[in-house]
Structure formats: structure tokens, C-alpha cells
Amino acid sequence: MVFKKGVSDIIAAVMIVAIAFGLTSTAYLWGVPLIQKRQEASLTEKIYGQFLQTNQNSLPKIIEDVANNRGVRSFTVSTDGTWELNEAEDWIEFTFTSKTSNIASGTVNPISLTPGVQCTPSPSPPTGTLGQDSSSVVCASAANLGNVFEIKYRVWFRELHDNPFSPKQTFDIDLEKDAGLTSSSGRTVRMTFSESTQQAIGQQTLITKKIKILLI
Image (cartoon, rainbow, N blue to C red; front, side):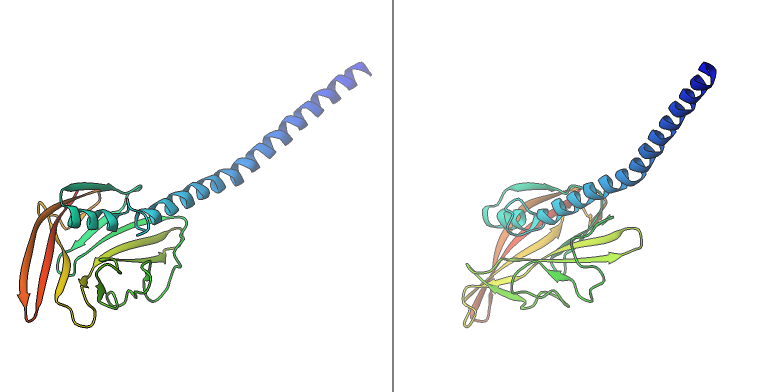
């Protein structure tokens, strides 16, 4: 009887260990992906904030600050991705992938993060009012690629008029490449004030602030 009791105790102990192991494995299989998804969601939200115009340390606000106050500033995004600069249309775009998205995916047109402005085919209205509107327009889009989302943030720069009905002065931020690069897979962008020019166009004066963009 003592022998049988000992065997029963051993079997019970083995079963308890097996059950505990099974529960641990189940918790791991379910818990780790959940933790990773929450981490991805947190990172996705952080990057969203880095392009939001209400954030003075966002990319659009830093470029505007350099244009208005001159000098040199740098911006570092929080994840790996790719940068593209379009000098002709004065926009800079960051693309990255994530398992989560806080931008509606599969929409026909990019979503504007700038109040009162549409993003397609380019910022509309194409101009703003000095002292009332922002020079920058931020557009976001997301595409579902199956296991991940491809998220893009594009920052445009448009002209600002001193008077929307009869403008006398027009202000413009002009993005120029620095060191010959218009694309990069690095995380950092450096903005350098280049020069300010004035040009008479009819009855208007166009004031252009040129900003050199270095994709590192």
C-alpha cells in the first residue's frame, strides 16, 4: 500500500508539472504576441505624434522654425523606414511598416492631419493665410499588406498670403536637397537655413525661405 501511494504521489506530481507547463506555454503563446502588438501600437502612436502639427517638436514644426528663425536643427524618427524628398513639389515623406495602424487603411485618398485642408491630388486649398494657417500640410495613409501595415506621412509646404483676397506678399518654404540625397533609409533628417530671397511677381512680392534637407 505504501508503494502504491508513493507511485500515486509521483504520478500526481508529474501531472501537476505537466499542467503547469501547459498553462505556461499557453500563456506564452498568447501573451507574447499581445505584448508585441501593444509595443507596436505604442510605437505607431509615437511616430504619429512626431508628425502632428500641435507638437512643436514634430518634423513640420521644426522645418517651420528653421525657416522663421534660421539656424540648423535635426529630427530623428523613432523607427526604421525610408525617407523621400521631392524638391519640385516641396514635400518630404517617411514610410515605415507596423503590425498596427492608427490611420484608416485602404482609403482612396490620404488623410489630412491639417484642419481645413484636403490632401488629393495635392493640398487643397493650395495656399493659406499668414498668421492664421500653417505653412505645412501633413497627409497620412496606410495600406494593409497582410501581416503588416505600410504607413506613410507626407509633409507638404504651401504658400501663405498676407491677404487672401488681395495679397501683397506671399511667403513660401522651399525644400532643397543637401549632399545630393533625395532618399534614405536612415532615421535622422537635418534641416539647415540656406537663404531668403524676394521676387516681384506682378503686384506681389514673393518671399522664399530656402531650407536644405540632409537625409542621414
